[in-house]
Image (cartoon, one colour):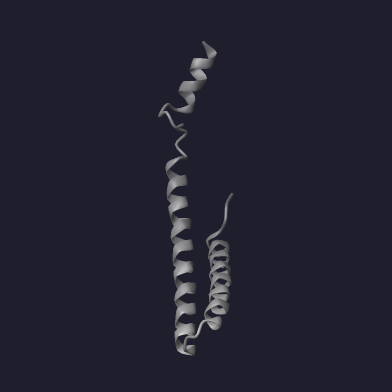
Length: 86
């Protein structure tokens, strides 16, 4: 599946906003000051965005390494085809 950088950023932003909303509701129930609630909510949103973006980059890195036609045992796809033709 291909996602453009803009679509991936928008998806990560939506996840961060959703997590921030959940955190805001939970923290508003707790007996904390308003500044602590706002600061914690913003920190959760920022960390969610950073972790989701980092996860996308790791997946892109891993997908780039697997595009050489190698399977898990290390033999290439062409080697397997030659074995089947014998």
